[in-house]
Image 1 (cartoon, rainbow, N blue to C red):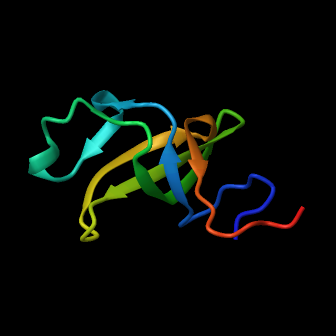
Image 2: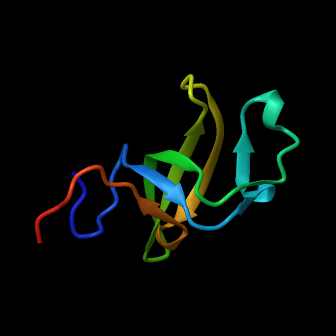
Length: 89
């Protein structure tokens, strides 16, 4: 479980603002015409890279069948980690 606002590998996340196509790696031909990923879209952290005293998170986006269609490096302030249980303070 994620506590104290830490972000870790395999955390489910939701993006807070649209991510433009220039920042995306689109992996499925059905999505090649997408101009952005909308806010609220859910993905999974699959890599964490430190750069310039900040972490960048590679987030993978997949459809309901588990087929990956896009990836993007996001900053911590561009998404929230989804929680399924209440964390005691």
